[in-house]
Image (cartoon, rainbow, N blue to C red):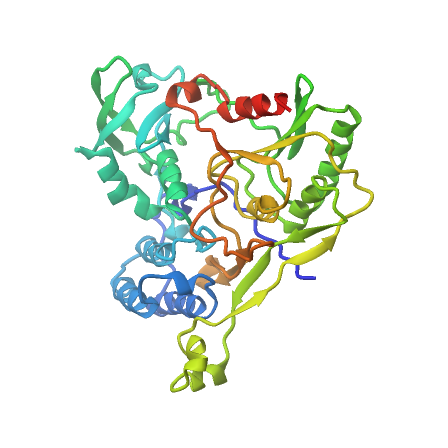
Length: 457
């Protein structure tokens, strides 16, 4: 039986530079020219041999490597060097292919304003601000950001924000851009214009010091809901149970799911809502455990896979024999069929109607679960937004000075049709997106839609 343990994607959409806690200006760079050449060349080599979606690229990997090498050779510090490595990996547009860690010498001191921003459609809005701050303007709440640094917001996003984001789909990248829209070098200001709900346009000039000034006593408006420290929780909406699972790691989460489902079933709910919004993934075995609660069948299907295969003899033959062309072009794959897994007979399947909530940050092993059930007869209805669109057993690559990157090596295939899961997340059956006003008021459109549907059964 093939088993894949997928790395949990912590802090969805987090740009590696945002993790920096200190400026690099006073830290001596540790990478020699030899280190820099080796690091980029190692990444290029692993991409050539192992990156799973190499057959879907619209550019030449060798050309990208050569152009990046020119830039790497003229970097004068580690900050600029790691930026070039990040840009190289971002070119592959895969959320499991990125620079993960670096020495302090490569980190910039990045901070955020005392406001939160979010994307709605093709527009970006202020949706939250910190209270009791003299430099915060409450008028900006709910205002559309129409201009940043003297350019239209979308132009600014395309030029400065999207190039810094890692993701597998444009939707995921744009939503991530909405979250990190105003971030930048700590202590610097960002200016722009905002269209308020009353129709007035006001200027803003905001300092990026949100982390530098943050305290445990900070309060926000609207109030930010604190996430439960528990990974698996459940609540009730009258006779409808709501099961929230925030991640699929560690493997002991399977026991927590079993216990929660047992308690829910004992109370004979009229419906069950499984909330997987923001679930960053973890272990596929946990996803399979949840799947077993949703079917009466004796067995369940788990996704098929594709991975790269490299054969020296095949590449040699590919010089003149078209039968080996894929090996010659580094585009040969091995396909593994979907697994049929016997369902644990001790699990009593849920009897009531089920709805599953998903969003942009349903990711990785969480998407494994959704891939597995998507074509399953009689599956639960999916409500919410398109998921992140990224899964696939990443290879961790160690670079000089304890830096590391990861590279996607596995392509999931829907277990019934064997269709590749690529270039698009899981689409909901019923799309439920809040307006900016609904979001600010805390109205959970997806939850309300799920309750309405389950009440009609």
